[in-house]
Length: 603
Image 1 (cartoon, helix red, strand yellow):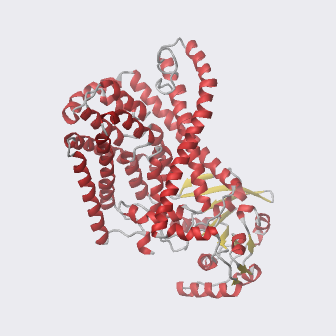
Image 2 (tube, helix red, strand yellow):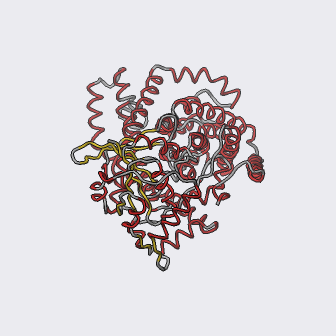
Image 3 (cartoon, helix red, strand yellow):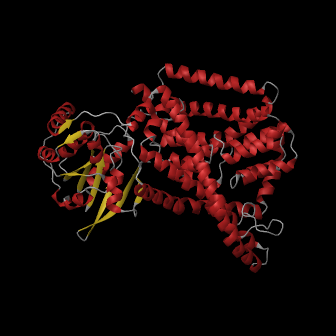
């Protein structure tokens, strides 16, 4: 038996799913799409029942990929639980009527019942059940209210008795039902409701967005660094390092197996960053450097999601992001990328279409320098003057604009308007937040870490065999002629796949001239992300699209290095500022010509 959860976005469908199934669930892409759905198991009277949480949908006549998947899943369900938002019957009951017309056994979960009462809405569930002809159960999923009744009444699910209607007839029926079952009483706005209104107004919305993004960035850095400095580093140094030292002694301190597992000893000691062994750098990068930021990112993202701010942030910044073929939601990975590309890559998975994921991934890995890159750029280039730092970041900003406009214009398809309903602000439930965090962390540990270790292994073998240095020598003529850089700079590009700070650090002892240093830093900043980010993006995009992103990345980094080399003079900053201004003007012209349509335009 299969039970299908169907409902509008932001109605608490996933919360009901978690309450019914616990945390042992499986997420998968629907065949032929990048849209995910989740399955779990419920023990119903001794019978193992599969529950499918379909993507949020407003209608069974699809207008987006998510709605296509929801409609395609409908025939696979033996029973449908229609999750309805009690605070907005007008919006939700249209989908309910469509489900009744499909003659599927149906039961309605009238969710967010507590919020409806707080808003002064009086609803008669018994009369609603009589009108619809199917069971209606009152639920408040965050509190667990109504879950037992919902399970108990599942066997009562039955098909509707209504015939097929036109769109106008459905809307008329919805209005008739709402008038009969719902009364609205007067009440004053709460503080949270006033904040909801301010969050989407043009001026106050931008201010709140800036504060929210800044706080998000600082919180992720603060929590991530705190976990590294006070939890993971002490564990690795205090408990794991002695074990590796003994293992190194057993392996004789040298040889192929030692190099593979432990790596090179630095001054006779194990260095978790520079040894490049599977048990040293491989595990340290995955668990002690990346995983803490993953914990921080998913915790903060879960809080923002459950509080209800993410849709409002998307609305406020949607017009800007549409210029480069993205929705307002894409501002999340862009901003997070300045802290760490790993959580930014994870956030890209929340974008709906394959086209948006491709554009966002390309822009993020090329033009958004992570905190590690930024710190090393300041450390290496800062002593030579702020002019050269400005040169690097203006180059990256210009690349972001130019590449975004180019991809938006030339990639097949378009970015449809993201029509969504604003959920009310809610106080997050810690139990639901922890369950969501557990699922996401488990997915990362199972899928991303093996790819990181595989990448470390490949780089380890390439370095041990001398392939890296051989390649560097082969590239010497090219680097000299094109970028005016020594062949040793190519080693930094290879090692940048593992650690960006190590890659930048390799540039320091090369005694490069100021112009050479700026060119090298620009190329490295726009070059491949670290292996952890690369591994996550393979999961998000697939090998085919990730290969295309890689080609664009190499070409763009090369051109950025060439232009930087020839623009490095006293007017260089003004040159790139002019390029950026020109691109902005082109973006405005493109908007006026009607080539893009944003959510704010639709509203």
